Length: 314
Image (cartoon, rainbow, N blue to C red; front, side):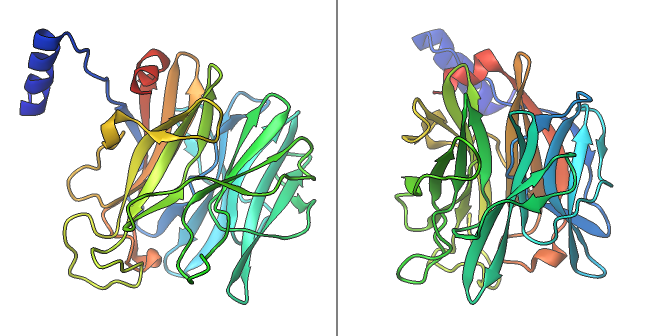
């Protein structure tokens, strides 16, 4: 038993406090590939007609430095990483709404980021169905009844020219008409950035897996060069909670939901409900955020926690 576990046990015995159960790592789906990396774990996996979970992500081939958006399918024991889609560049999130597969992708033009909505009647071949919308990157969709919640950065940059890594929200009933973007969650520490936050509705309440990116101690962004101190250029996973999908708070007393292991400096992830459990698909890297992405190596693992236990965090 670790010192932390002993202190928690003592606290529970003396004060009657029940310690929170941490997510358990179930298995490693892909272990630091030698020639490729995985990015883009922002969407919520959904079940297709075959009962597989599906998620959309980037596969980057290191020798050629080319990016390939793929669909991964899984029964939680095996993932197929060889299902290329017709979408090129900026792949972000795919989900199912009213029996139809939709998604989004982005592209950059003249220093601005533009998103568009995609539709695939066969679940694979995507075509745009919307005009381009000037927004930020790294969005994900959540279906709440007959409404789609799109959690997306409100813009690529602030008025001061700084990256605008905050969480915005747009809503739609038909995937065509969208509400104006609201900023619903933003950091209070100037050195923190909210990279992305996939949101899952669990028994009527909203839980998010927040990716908190820590800038350099002097505010340096990804251009920062080594050496690095403390948590500079790291990405850490936090659990958030909201009753209305707009007013979020970080749970667990501000501590990470999934602790980064020693030697790991970036973790990205998403989560989804699977029966009585909440599964988290987590991509980890020993590289700092500031390093050239083509040099990074990411693994992919599944973590799990019971629904009853995750509710205790709110």
